[in-house]
Image (tube, rainbow, N blue to C red; front, side, top):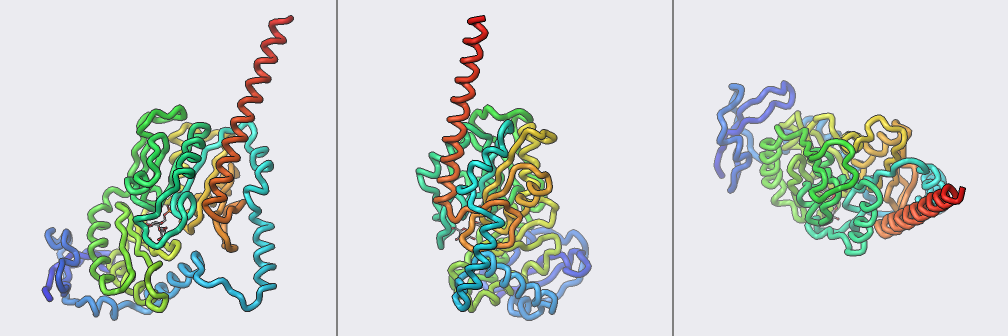
Length: 386
Ligand SMILES: O=P(O)(O)OC[C@H]1O[C@H](O[C@H]2O[C@H](CO)[C@@H](O)[C@H](O)[C@H]2O)[C@H](O)[C@@H](O)[C@@H]1O
């Protein structure tokens, strides 16, 4: 066990203070330990155990809320006690959020004369949810489908993942990528015919948080290392703490470990996903802002003839669904088998249905282009014969 001086922002005052943290083995906040305190502060000695015990009541309540919310966004047990009530609930939800496949014609009719722009979340949307986040591969058929989609519509992948990581899964250079929940945006590296606006897009609104995120990553690895199944993923501008392989009885304990670290960083906030807690900067930037930024980059900022379609499965995708609802443009599609509170207009049950929907969209576009071509040719022939 060694003591290390580290600089952390005080949760209440928001002022940096230097604390001595007792850690066993590797450094808890190694990069901060190398830096002199930015603001001179008080030195206190606090052990890893104490970090957990000292959580205040509000934090305790918040932790319970995180765990509840995480359970709700990725239910582990389907309630079977009152099947009829749950059937009614399901039916009423499906009435309000009908299948995008069943409503395909209405959707394409609404998009007539407008440019469809596709926004696709990755995990749970293009790839099925699996236990190991490093093995959430996309099928070759899904990749081929997305490639075709990008041939006909400007297409962006919007993910909570680190941009490089999601690119290594998707491997399509002609797409836009918004990683770290939209905090890392890059335009296509391969020629795209849709660049109406800026030539080379690269936008990273949270770059000043990089050292802090690295520091918190190390702290989270340290505090969670004895929790079997816990996994911390570094997504560059944000972090994920995975609960999927942790015994549900230990979820509160793991959430407390996360809370103990987060409490020391008031400029970071927490969101929940599917059996995951995500830590990110408090800046006002999310997948919804990324969607707006991308529309602007594509040259559709104030256009009425654009029709954005966003498909996602997660709580964090709600920010994008909300933007579309507020703009009254396009629509959101939630990928979910169970009813969820959502701003999306339509639903699809799983990635295989997402693929079916994308394929139909491509076929519909091909057909309407062919039709347009035939009409134009007939008009030309008529002009010639006059
Ligand atoms: O915005 P997304 O592309 O949906 O990313 C959200 C998180 O997705 C990943 O976690 C989820 O998928 C994993 C693999 O299927 C699964 O094991 C995990 O339980 C899910 O939460 C990714 O690993 C996270 O970093 C993303 O934040």
